[in-house]
Length: 146
Image 1 (cartoon, rainbow, N blue to C red):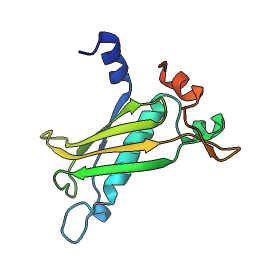
Image 2 (image 1 turned 45 degrees about the vertical axis):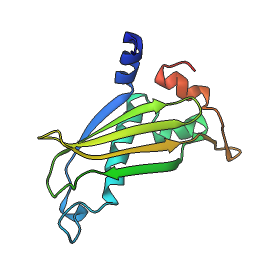
Image 3 (image 1 turned 180 degrees about the vertical axis):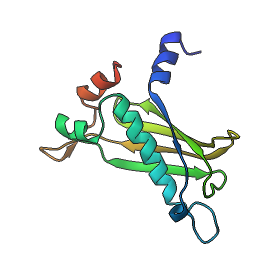
Image 4 (image 1 turned 120 degrees about the vertical axis):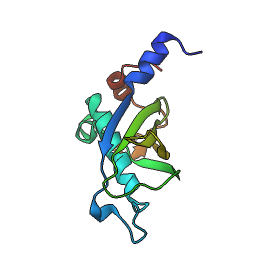
């Protein structure tokens, strides 16, 4: 059972955004084209990282790039034009890599639409070498200890 401190940290490492699929996101089958879900995840990831003042410009300033090296999506049900979706992004790993888990739900019903995760690794911009341990700047920004 998680402690109160662990639950507080988990809650703090979470962000929710609302997105509404536009006409140009819809395919010939009249549902959101599968590739556009990635865009919705990125909106949630960007909002989450901004909470910690470690968005992409701040990453660059800190000397690290954080490319996505793995992305997994599971499509549970189709989203449609104009359907309001809530996308929750939660940081679940930060020691050797940055893993963010996502849940996309219909905003009105709460029904799950998509689940996903991304994995990012730190790359030293100066040397272009991948770091096998997350740099201290990430831990500092998240307010966590290894």
